[in-house]
Amino acid sequence: MKLLKILVIDDEKLIRWSFERHLDSKGFKVFLAETGEEGVRLFEKHYPDIVFVDNRLPGIQGLEVISRIKTIDEDAVIVFMTAYGSIDTAVKAMKNGANEYINKPFFFDEINLLIENIKNNINITNEIQLLRRQQREKITFDDIVGQSPVFKQIIQVSKKIARSETSMILLLGESGTGKDLFARAIHNESGRKKNPFITINCSTFPDTLLESEIFGHEKGAFTDALKLKKGLFEIAEGGTVFLDEIGEVNLATQVKLLSVLENRTIKRVGGTVDIPVDIRIVAATNQDLKKSIEQKTFREDLYYRLKVFQIDIPPLREHKEDIPLLISYFIAQFNSQFHKNISGVDRNTAELMLQYQWPGNIRELRNVMERAIILEKDNIIQVESLPCEISNTSASISNSNVSYNFELPDEGISLEDLEKQAILQALQKTGYNQTKASKMLGISRDTLRYKKKKHNL
Image (cartoon, rainbow, N blue to C red):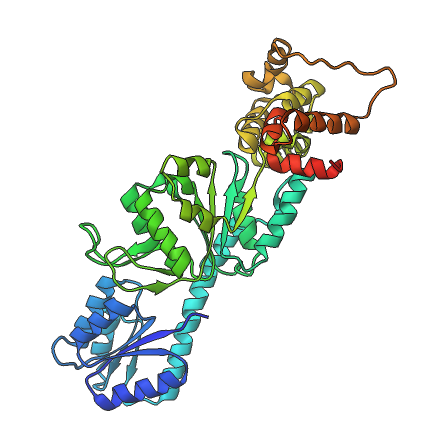
């Protein structure tokens, strides 16, 4: 659990000593300030969770201290203390941004109750935000559609990784294969599921803005930094950060990311203080990071630090057995959304969709189904409702110049044996180079390894 930090600003030495002794015994981290100016400096340095501010102080007064702290961090939680019992002063303090007030003299039982109430309010606010987010993003591996052997194997491995204690996972796969769904499922099936899941699409931010979003910035760090801003790594404390399109991050930010992965601390832009963070990072890209390393656009040390566990998500063309299942899933989804009553696809439509190579993968299939369900007038999707690149698939295949020297023997052959022979020939022709053999067969290396094991090759 995060250690609660409390700042006490009071000019009375006995009050400061009493606070320190009592709060330290409760396991809190305590900071003490004798003047308002010193209190503001300590707040900027440590960003405590709760601030106790006395009214009468040397130099700037308590009301002004509240205003300055709120300018630095509008979410700061402040308790106003006054020995002068003026309701008007307390009201002014609340207007300036104080969350609570307490009259002197007080007993520490009152302070305990006050801190407990503040903690509960913070937790309730965080829980409400988290529940709202989880309602939108509650995806587990059971929600990911796919029953093909290669896909089921990837799901099984991903579940084990999700439930492990590893803090770094790398997802590789073409655009549209569902890397974001895997990231959410990994979070929701981990021990971090009650904490935030935050997505950062690295390709949508300019270089300078991305660094500020990830790490946050101090007030005055740059021209528009009018107040402190916590970064998304800090906000995700205890949870998961999904760094989508990690291959788009510039080299300078890559250095800082590597430092976070190794030291588990961040520095805000313009800051000097190391802030500990407890997060799991799931990074994803559709780029060939090894090629990016060769081109000097991605750091080799960051790549190997990220790929503690690497999950390769196959393109749809390598698990076409899942297409009928996905079609049924999207029909049900869009029937509900568009108040339609589509019951399926006709035979010719199904054959064309199975022949098509789906360069945009599952995302493309989803878009095609949405379009078809909107356009279709009957309750069965016809070829006419498909885009032309799919409806012309059959013609493009028949007109291709590719020919195969294969003739079905009179006694017949099982598809299992045929697959086994094709894999064996590809391996023999490539000198058992799995990378070349998988390219020759039009499948991934993971799929080839699975099929080798399946056929005992």
